Image: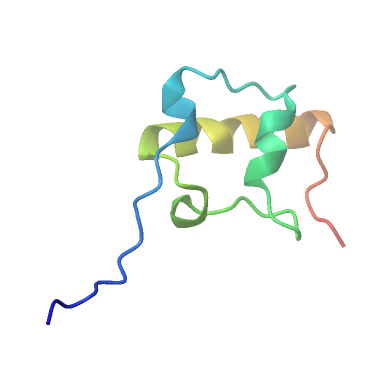
Amino acid sequence: MAEIHNRKRRKVCALCMNKPVDYKSDIIKKYIGETGRILPRRMTGTCLEHQRVIRKEIQRARFIGLIPYVNK
């Protein structure tokens, strides 16, 4: 009998499709968890390059005050 593999498909980076990321956009809120922490790559499916961009833009938005540092 053929074995069934329960492998999940690898997530494709949504930002590689030429979607710009900016600290003013609402796109970065998708990459922040309930507690206000930045979600890891394994959960969001972003590539390393865009994960770094996301981190930088979230930090800018936090510094300006658009996003809180911690959600309680």
